Length: 422
Ligand SMILES: Cc1ncc(COP(=O)(O)O)c(C=O)c1O
Image 1 (tube, rainbow, N blue to C red):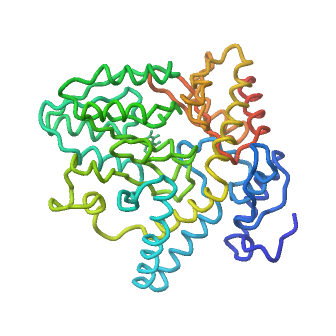
Image 2 (image 1 turned 45 degrees about the vertical axis):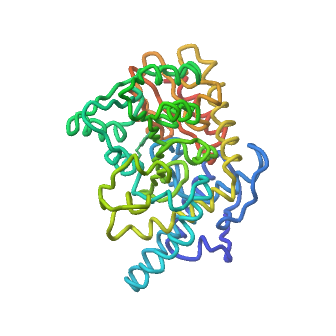
Image 3 (image 1 turned 30 degrees about the vertical axis):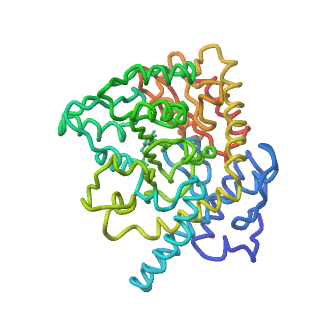
């Protein structure tokens, strides 16, 4: 492939390396397109639009690798890589001025973009290093006394569970775990199971918008019923944001924690916490007992990772340029392709629902008889350079394949053929 002298991507040494990665990615036989310049693509109008190939050229994945583990950590596009790099240059060349410039960008660009993307007021949202930090803040912050009850599902991530276990031993809060089956039976079943554990002592329900295994919970319905009973709803949105449009205001929950370094493709070490303004009295600030705004309640004081936070803006712009509705359609198209292939294999049991209301578009979990999921991760990497993950929890020996919009049906076909052969 010839170098394009005008391309910003390949002007510097660093990006020469990046370009090699891109060429490798497309030289792998899955796609065959020219190297695109940064953000030089049109909004795709369908899941098979040729613009997806141009969008795919924005990634610098190492040659020989196919990435299908986005639910663990997203793969940032080149404009995000570039933004982090230029942020570090700023604070390295002129530390204090650089910090102020980045802080301005975070306040005037990133926070409004974040608020717009999730339909919240920017005063109700703070940036964190990840979803775990946000989950700790919301769980350790809610005011509870000994004997108060909290309802949790059995499908929580340890990052959501740990702070509750802390509250249990420190404050005598009673945790009531509700078993939720994989795949989900129905929206009604999830609501009924959670609500049947609610008593007059219940103060909060804590659950995922999308679980690690890709099950999608009816957040709005749960929040509605809970609000009528005076019960707070604290949501873990780590696996939801970036796979489909999320309107947090409309969901009606009291708090919502998320990662930005998964499906939004922001740099590693980025996430956010939302607390509804009218719900802030449910909480006590760990930082300032006189706190009056959501920001002052929850924003940890001190020096921040400015280049990473400022680069969240590049990721949000990239996602916005593609469109979250388009991302959802493309992810659904790819996971349907995967599920259809899996359905033809007699020894495979799919644990993800076919119903889009109960499954996220990008993550699929399944078991194959006599195949240890943990071992399969290594087999796929060694045999064909595919990065996938295991889901050995909730009593399952499942494999998790999390495909984002940058994956292709031919990659999925190769995954399926390999699965059949092992
Ligand atoms: C459902 C869920 N919650 C929370 C987390 C923790 O996310 P983070 O690494 O951003 O803290 C994860 C990570 O995989 C997750 O899947």
